[in-house]
Length: 191
Image (cartoon, rainbow, N blue to C red; front, side, top):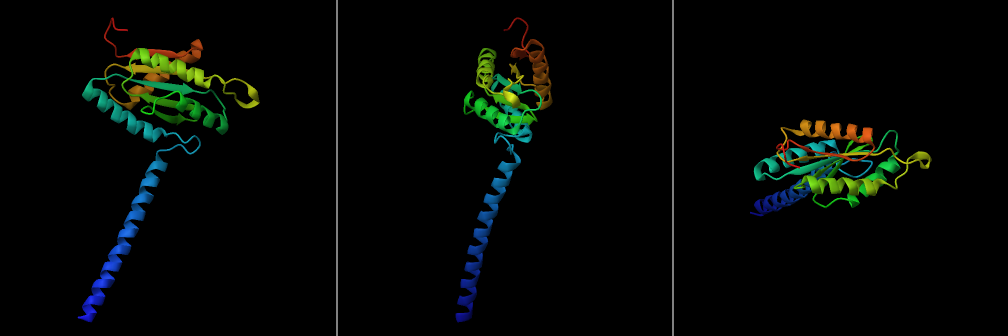
């Protein structure tokens, strides 16, 4: 009987230790998942996290028939990590907590603005521009920031359509030196 009791105690202790290991592994996995979706320079989401969030926003838009806006910010060429971090802070300050900001490329950020109309999207572009106005590149020269936005009244086919549409807006913003916004897939006659 004493041997059985010892075996039971050892088994319970082993299970307790195993449970502790499982909890530690789950925490480690959650931390690794977060790191895999976070830009290590700026602390905002990365391109992978943006793509996942964009797929979810497209599905939400499709289900609830709500518009959403995507804004893209290109800081210009050859900005340092300090400028990238400052830009991330400024962009976060101009956004709602429900908005998602991600670093898409070396000098490019992208923002998903859920349930944001065209008029509200244009206001956000102005807030983003104002928030970045005081940033300076190396040598205290102003950044050549380009900001573009697209409001999707109807959900796009996929993430690539979002990126294509924002790339067009960035090109237009570079050419005009002003924020560029368009309402994508609008019904003719709608604003």
